[in-house]
Length: 360
Image 1 (tube, rainbow, N blue to C red):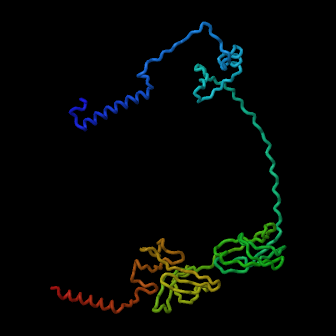
Image 2: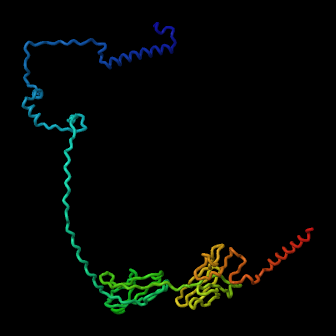
Image 3: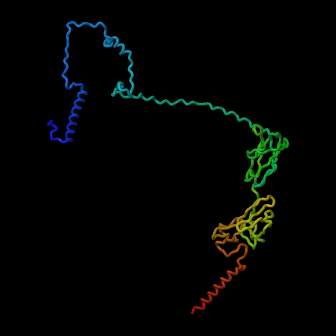
């Protein structure tokens, strides 16, 4: 064929591929449109009958095509309820009159309310205080010192029963029933650690039977009424002497270990910061710290730093004011100078003499 004349093999293959693709596209068009493109328009022949004949079988949808009568329409209009559902796409618009507005009713004239006088409810008289079943007369001891050791408490009274208990400031104590007139309990030392009044009452564990309350006085123990103003310390802490100032005396006084001060307090220990006294009668120990006034102040006349009971003529030891002063030793007594300090002082004196000789 002349179509492939003078063509290379590659060009021939391209021409053949183009022809095949064209044929395939025509076939797809024919398949898609059912041959309507390449076929002729069909001819329809209608035959008219002079007299149409009704069909023998009645039409099944005849009743559906009939229009409702006027009575049926009126009945449906009167009895059919119109439901308005907001939000529905076929809901009718709410009927409203844009020219209508709310007219408030005329105000009612103010009429003062009639005051109501209420009769006060009578308060019933208080019931008389019931008489306690138990009677607590007194306790032994009637007073103790704060900080004392545990002690035995006796409650004397009447009408006590074996199930009676002693309550110390609201705390139930193991109670020993001695007789209908006496109960005994042990008071721990922790219950009287501080000063003040303590309530004692006798009652049963269920609280139905009880007694009147009795008070126990817990008073402060006697304390030293003097101030620790200084000490003289000796080698090995042997025979150390502490000096005190009593409010009833003008001059200070000294005491050593185991000495009795004020007829009651024994010197238990002495240190540069405090002195410990022991009460011979009660066994209490009291710490009396060294009196230290503020730097630059003393107990002179008219100074606010003068302590109560200390004469204003006494100036206590203050290392910040005079570091060379020794508590308890007058300043006119020669001081002991160690040998090392003596050699250093002599050497300084020799150096001063040499400097004086070198001068013209």
